[in-house]
Length: 498
Image 1: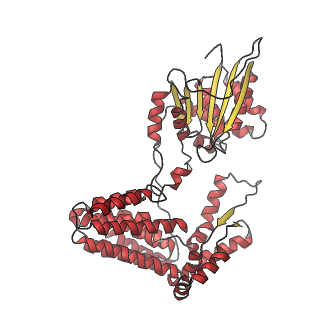
Image 2: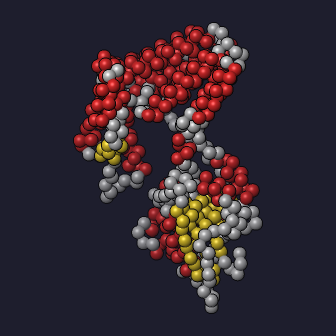
Image 3: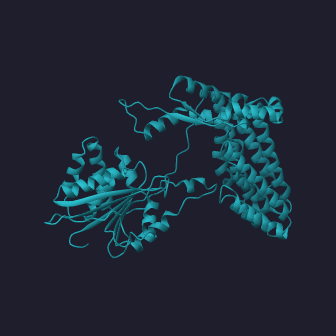
């Protein structure tokens, strides 16, 4: 610092209250005899909403100070970041230095668009950012300040303000921070709760958070159906332990998707794979099959999407996340953009096949339905329409889409079984390739295309001792980017020697 000048920067994204936090800090300084200036520059570095807020302050004197408008590398005393990757960006831009910067950061993640778009696991490594912070900053204060704030019914800006007070980086007492919040008026009570919770979290030791494992969902129903369900569970119990571990949630998934008879089909496929497996390999083939057969059978179609959107558990979750109370009205708007394929897929198999083969009808259905629609599912008409669609699961087995999915599923399993006699590891990798097929509409179509291309590549390397390894590489390449550029390169490499 120079002559009492303090430089503080905040990196926050839309909805995190960066502007409110900046106002509190500015009011805090001015209310305690300091001259202060705050500026902000909106950016699109992450989630189209990352903003840099910058505050300079110093004790008032006979001459009015001249403050800078933006932070400079190596010249920031306090850096506050409202999300873990923003801390990484601050470090990369040189705002955090070991000789002067106190870094206050929330450890939670608000995933960037680029992370969400990656077909595989595109989430950046928070541990690497924390390791860099320990080296780059003079002092690090880190905790999940978002969870701290939400836990007391407020937002992260208030808990970060509490962490700033706990850091002692500014020469003001805690009471002055509280006064700045109270001066804001509306919502002050909740903000004060979050302020004190953030203050306590910043003073406490940083403890690694244990992963919370969700307990199995309870199952209930009529006595006859429960008897059938217990019979399916008994079949799961007879599977090898390593297989049963994944077959149990797989069974619950497919039964929730359709019905108990569908669960019987699922276990039949798993048991058929087990009959071909070998204990010497630890039943790796059947274990992977138990997972991915369930995913393949519980595909996303219009019926499934409508069913999920009208479940009471979803409405309760949204209400909780939005903080709905008796004195607040909440509206829920759903966005739909069905393609002709989704409409044809719901139709009876024969009719759907005829329409699918007719380009005129496909184009016509596309014009009628492929328009973005916003439906207020908190209203009777929209909710009723979705509820009726979700209730069509009883007709799903006779639909054109179901026939397509079953045919694709059987071809995939037959391909894996075809490699089993000569290359067990390749058969396992083929089963794992089903990971590429996921999602709904265009996302599903892209994944299906990549899946087919990877299996074509596997066929070209079959017979080689490294066939399984190459199939794994192809799958990982397909998961790297949405466009499939990495997969194109991997397939070209195979073409050069296969």
